Each structure stands twice: as structure tokens, then as C-alpha cells.
Amino acid sequence: MDATSVISEFNLAYQTGDIDRAFGFVADDCVFTMHFAEDLVQHAGRWEGASQIRQAIDMARSNYQYLVYQPVITRVDDDTVRVRVDFIGWHRASGEQLSMTFTQTFVVQNGKIIRCDEYHDRAKLEAFFRLMMATAAEHGKDFKG
Image (cartoon, rainbow, N blue to C red; front, side, top):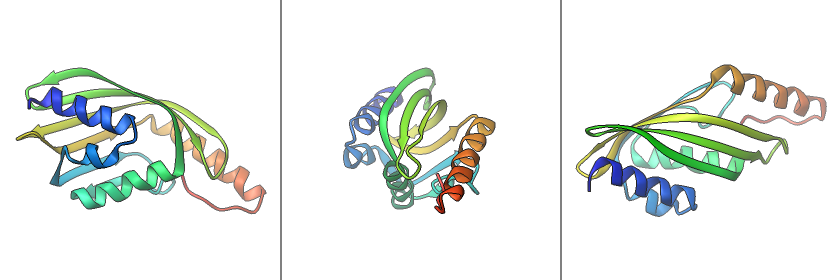
């Protein structure tokens, strides 16, 4: 399976909530880095190995009800596939809706994802989470994104 097909199938499974099927396309030694505010978002940072990545994904999906998750492949260079994702999610702890677009760069080898870097508008996310944290603090709650 070529890189484009792997990412297309991975995204289709992820989009429909079939995380077990999606992880069939993830190499055991994959590295996944979410480049945004680690002090604000529990599932941000660098995750190594499919089991750690799965924990981060499960954490993200438990924090948000996905309303829209629309990935679009924007560029393919050999084994590197770039994806733009339009996302709208309901943040369960705060009840706020987060709407954003982010990008992912996947590297595929031997039919498996070996690396993914995810990039967000850091300033927008930090402002959103700080607002939610301030609102939560006013109501005696404490949470991260």
C-alpha cells in the first residue's frame, strides 16, 4: 500500500471512530509529536510507540466530542503526506466548542505510519484554553484541555 492510501485509510478509520482499525496503520515504534502548549493540553507533546500514542489519542477523544473531523490530503512527497484537518469539537469539561484547522505531516514506511507531526495555531489554542481555565476557576473547577 502506498503512503497516500495508508493515510487515507488511517484517516477514514479515525474519522469514523474506529481507532483500533486506525492503529493497524501505525508502526509499533512510531513517534507522534503534537506541537502545542503542553502546559495547557494533556495530550500535547512527544509520544513514542504505538501504545503511548494510543493513550494520547484516547485522552484527546475523551476530552472532546468530535462534531467535525475532516482531513484533506494537501501534498504528497514520496513517503511524506501532508494533511489539513478541519476540526470542531465540544470540550466535555467546559462545555465550550473549539473550532480550528491544523496540519499533520505523516511519514510512511512499509505500509505503516512511522512519524506524525501535528501543528496548531499555538496562540489561538493558548488563548482558548486560558479562557476556559479562567472560566472554570471562577466556578471552582480545574481541568486541562
